[in-house]
Image: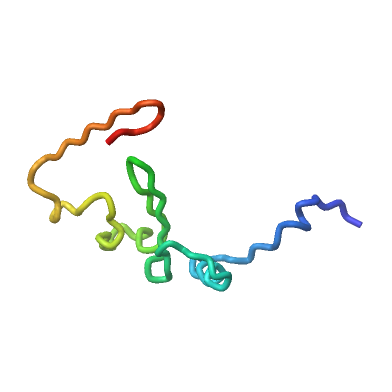
Amino acid sequence: MSKRSFFYYLIPIWDITSREEAIDYVESKNIELGGISKVKIYSREQNILHISHKGGMLENPENDYDDFLVMTNTIEKAPNEAEYVEITFERNESNV
């Protein structure tokens, strides 16, 4: 008998090899994806300063990116005047 880690028996074998397969798996378990789909297949992580996007159409920089802009605009849609925002912090909490 080989010596295998205790965790070997607890962790299922992960055979998902693409984002599409991951979406199929999650949908089969009725888990909400928060807007991620096979059409909008990128993931989004947001904090107070920015949103990171990964995957899907973003893999090719020649693609149009209007669909995933949330906190910003394209240069064409941006206002023609500056806007300034001041943020202060008290007790590790932001005050915008």
